[in-house]
Amino acid sequence: MKILVCIKQVPESNKVEVDPVTGVLKRDGAASKMNPYDLYALETAFRIRAEVFTSFPWDRRRRSR
View: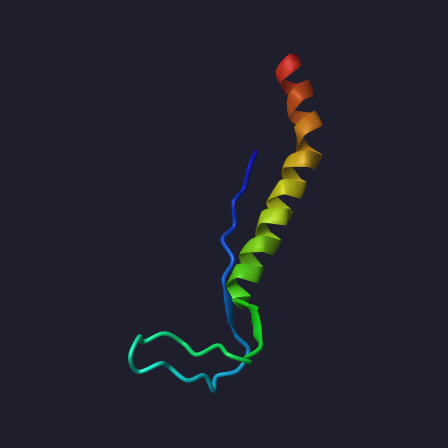
């Protein structure tokens, strides 16, 4: 099973300026962090992947009977 999780970096601070011409955040010198919801999605994907690995041998034995 392959799982894809999209991750986005967001500014670490709420005090970010927006460029009035382009409407894009000014990130010059601003620290970034991973979006907290993306981190939760990544942790969930790892958890699902671990469950698949741990339950696979049980499923294979059950199908062979």
